[in-house]
Length: 334
Length: 140
Picture 1 (cartoon, rainbow over the protein chains, first blue to last red):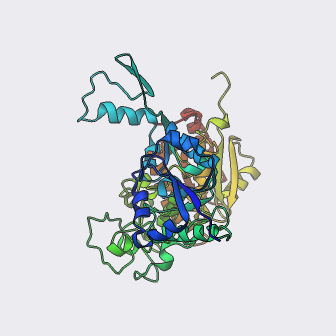
Picture 2: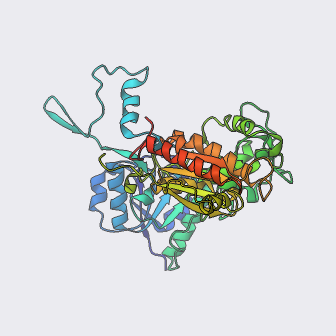
Picture 3: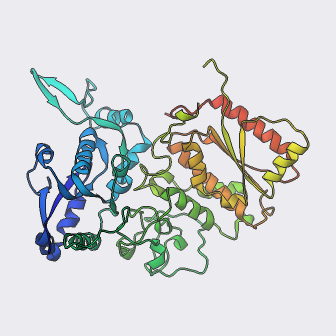
C-alpha cells in the first residue's frame, strides 16, 4: 500500500539550478506525482515562509543552497524540525559550493567590495545593507548577512546527501525511487548515504591513461589544444578527478573539460583540496625530480595561479580550514 | 599581552633523517626551545596536506616539516620531493586563507645534523614568536 509523502523543497543561498534538475526529470515526473504531495516549494509555487511555519509535519525535505543569511538558517532549522528525512541537495548544501569560496574573505570586506569599492557602484554615503533600515518613517527589514558561508550539515543534522552542481537528473531519479520504496513500506538507505558512487572519477573515466602519469608543466585550459581521449593530468591540465567522487557520468570530462570537483571528496576524506594538493605533489615531474633543483620545482609550482580556487572550487566551507584564518581561528589555543 | 607568548609548533619529522637528527640533538644535549611537538612519520612523503591543515585548524602557531636532503637522501627515493611540492602549494594556499605562509617551514635535516636541527627549531620558534599568536587572521 503506497502512502503519499509530504515533501518540502527549501531554498538557501542558491541559484536554483537544483530546482531545474528536478524539473528535468521530465518523462519521469509522473512517478513523482504518484506518491508525492509538495507542501512547500517556493520556486514552483507562491509559498511564503509563514506558510512553512504553519505546517505540522513533513515526510521528506530537500534543501538546496548554502547558508549565508539568518533567513537561510531559519528555513533549514524549520525543515529539520518538521521533517522525518532531510536531504542535503546539491554541492552548495553539501559542501558550500562555488559561492562558498567567499569564505576566503570576511563578510565586512565582501560587503564593502560589492557596495562601495567596485568601479560601477555609485554609493557616496557608503551605505551598506543592514537588517533594519528606516525610510520615510517606514521600517524595512532584510535578512542578516552572516559572517561566513556554511554547508547545511554544519547548521542542522542531515540524513542524506545528493552532491553535484547541479545533481544530475539520474541521481534525482535514484532519490525519487528510494523514496517511492519508502512510501510503499520499504526501508530507507542508511543515514549519511551519499547518492553517488563511492569511487573516484578516475576509476570509471575512459580516457587513455599512461602507465605513469607525469605532469611537466601546468597549462590552463585555454593555453593548449586538449586531446579528447587522453587523461587531462597527463596533458598538464589540473583535473580534480582523482580527489572527486564519481557518479555524474563525467559530464564535464565528456565535453573535453577537466573535472572541477562538484561531487565533493571521496568517502573518508575530510578535505578534497588537500587530497588534490597531494596528487599534484605526486605527479609533478614524478621520477625525474632529482634532475631539478628545489628552486626550479618552486618555479613550476608558482605557475598554479590560484590553489584555493582550483582545489576548493566547491568545498571550501566544509574543508578543514573552512574559512579565512581557519575555523577555530587559532583562538582556542591560548 | 602581559603573559609571555609561547607558541605551539607541530613538527612532522621523517624517521630516517630529521627525527634521527632531533634524537642526535638530544643525545648531544643541545639546547633548543621546548615549543615543538615532534611527530614521527615514516617519510615526509607520508605527510598528507590534511595533517598540516588540521594542525593549523586545531590552533598550532607554526608547522615544521623535517625530511631528508634532496636530491638523493630519501630512504624511499622521492618522498622528500613529494613533501616539497605539497609544501610549496600549501604555502600559497595558506596565504590565500589569511594565514601567514611563514608559519609553515620545511627544512632538510640529515641524521647527522643535530646541530642544524637545534638551530632551525630555534630560528623558527623565534620567528613564530615575532609573528605572534594566531588570534584571527594574520593577513588583511
